[in-house]
Length: 80
Image (tube, rainbow, N blue to C red):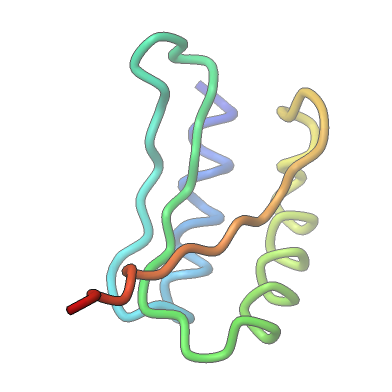
C-alpha cells in the first residue's frame, strides 16, 4: 500500500528527532484512520518544522482526508 510506505518513510526520517522509534497506529474501528506517535521530543518547535518539511517531501498530503494536525501530549503530573 503506497500510503503506508509513504508514512513509514516519514517515520524513518523523523526517527532522528525522537528518543524512541516513531510508530504508526490505526483506529481499532476504522483501519483507514492512522495516527503517528513520536516520543522523546526535546525541541517541539524544531520537531514541528522538521515534521512539516518531511511530510511535504514525502507528499503525505496526497493520502490525507481533511487536514493533518499535530497534537502534543505528556505524562500527567501525579497529584499527592
